[in-house]
Image 1 (tube, one colour):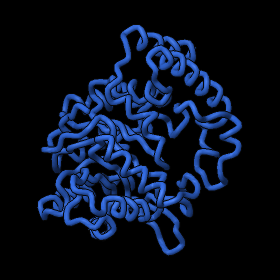
Image 2: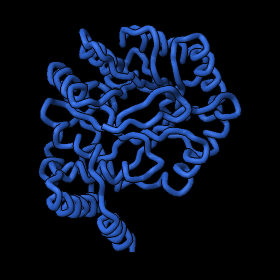
Image 3: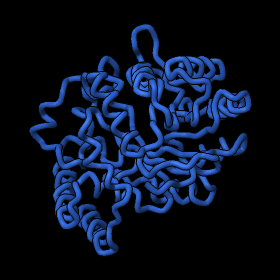
Length: 319
């Protein structure tokens, strides 16, 4: 896979990274349902064998469990991938999730992530959400200090808008931005992606398959049967009237993919990667055998005609 430089860093990453949100398992507010750790470890190993060289996780995924599973999966691995994780989402003894950008809180989070990941340095440490917004400067200054102390190599943000990034930049340069970006969610195209491009801020897109909607495996029946603790059951993308439009989009992706021997998921991720501002896309997998249906997106290129066809679909859907 062709590597791309991660913004102003010395890291070069593959177009696709392994997303470790779902492998956090159940028992927390944004879970994807129960998860077998053995499957998670096998899926991570499969990703590494395929050449993927970075894993994106967060402290809050499974309330620390995702980071622990990542560490277990990397036991004995000679060529270790880059590890990206996040801070600012915290939880209490009742597993209730809150947000903090206070310096002492971020320092506690960083130390806990280092322990769970069994590493001395985090390759990319990101503020998960700009919340509370009044504490952005304190949080970002703390990440900059942790970098100087050698606990983290590079610092990034997630879910920030342009003004919030400007506030952070006044303190220290931003290596990367992690926004939600897919065929279904294109809100960042107007202002956020152009700003990142101008400022040499790498973009690593999350949910390029819209949390599974664009894989081709999701149906209305399957959505109705999702576990009670799967957050997608209650999200607007998975409910009418958006659901019918989204599944119609999948039919178009399937038709395009069939011409190239590609899956709808590969077409969806390839579309995200076709934006020159995007450095990489985060792709999750919960069990071995899932990644082969997506990994081809790293090399697949949509034709100009196919890109126009997709754009035309959106124009009609918005009319």
